[in-house]
Image (cartoon, rainbow, N blue to C red; front, side, top):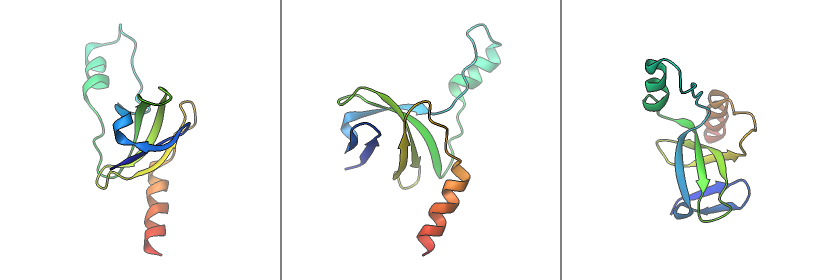
Amino acid sequence: MLLVPCPWCGPRPELEFVAAGEAHVARPSPDADPTALAEALYFRANTKGLIAERWRHLHGCGRFFNAVRHTVTDKFVMSYRPGDPAPDLARLAETLAAEAAL
């Protein structure tokens, strides 16, 4: 079973959580150009590797939080509260690769 690290409650089983999509997406105003709205709603990075995502601890504290997850291994690297600065994913990937090489 996959353990999701809630910043408030600690690691819990994935069944307690719901994914809410990619984190740190700039959302345009409702009266923006339809092309900008379509891009914000439907186009995502879909990267192979680390990605920052929004999650909600549905059956726990009920709060939203952000987490960095590796899309190939499904391993959660870290989680952080909304409002905290977004991690540098490239630097984090380099650090994890260096640690794995040891």
